Length: 184
Ligand SMILES: Nc1ncnc2c1ncn2[C@@H]1O[C@H](COP(=O)(O)OP(=O)(O)O)[C@@H](O)[C@H]1O
Ligand SMILES: O=C(O)C1=C[C@@H](OP(=O)(O)O)[C@@H](O)[C@H](O)C1
Ligand SMILES: [Mg+2]
Image (cartoon, rainbow, N blue to C red):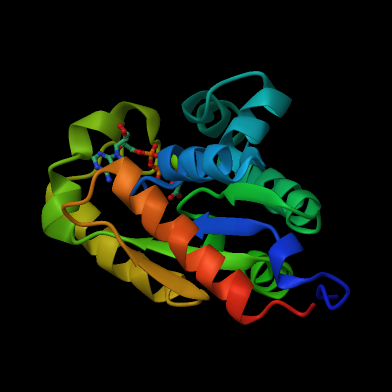
């Protein structure tokens, strides 16, 4: 496996990080700025099941969701020039980590717990993993999950930055890397 035949510039970009850090919003904006296709893995899963994630969890269970998540990520991460946002639970699967890290450039969107908890109301209804949990339980999940996100190529700080600024920082970082490592 791997992507030895792909130049750095052709590699797809993958965004990882905890629920609500902005993977979908920022990924979509970065795609627009780079004139690339944007793929949100959750949206692809929802299209396949023709129902929202919360319904998929209720009807088929998390295991079925995770299997579909892996298959869709495997499909898109092997393609060139895509901007891909995966769900916050994707990197809990070692196989997904391996596929993304070997084929793509993986950006970890980092946000502190203090900033994250201000955002909870924006996402709670659409994230089945958070539902029925106390704030303390969510905090524990937040910190437990961080170890999986340590497997990345580049970390992006997002605290106190609006979506536009984060996306611009990512585009700048990519352009610098592409120039530095341009094989031609
Ligand atoms: N840098 C930011 N500043 C303020 N709000 C943000 C920022 N990034 C994302 N958001 C908001 O947080 C919510 C969750 O964003 P989303 O892109 O769905 O996150 P994820 O895909 O990581 O779960 C959205 O309402 C989005 O507008
Ligand atoms: O962290 C998780 O386990 C999940 C995160 C969600 O995506 P976002 O990270 O985009 O919210 C979505 O894949 C699903 O609700 C499960
Ligand atoms: Mg998302």
